[in-house]
Image (cartoon, rainbow, N blue to C red):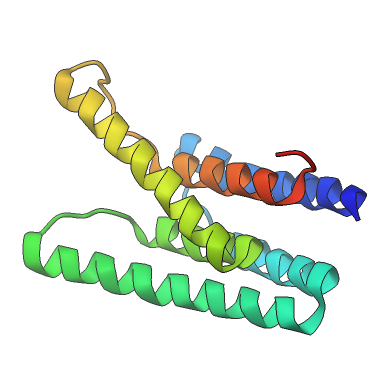
Length: 153
């Protein structure tokens, strides 16, 4: 079963690479790529944990999409702040299908801590450009997936 974790992570990296690279090239990530990421997570959950894993992955992805979308909409309505874009919310939800419930909470915690730390450095003048939230989310997804699927981590 340990070898499956390595293949799982390798495939996750292959699917995440375009999501991170396309925005750096000035292009938007197409929606079908987020669907491939989510479908791959659902397939991996089904292969590794069967039907219960598939159901948990579906609920984690749909729940993340609903909660993140609602939270961002409420923040935007009340404060005018634009916290995450639609693509970043889709990336968060697609990543949740790979990570499940506890992994999703860990991914959000890692991403928020990183974004807050970068915002503090930016406020202090140490960082000039705005942090790339998509890349931070992708790193958080991989970090949590490594912790879940590699032995001894």
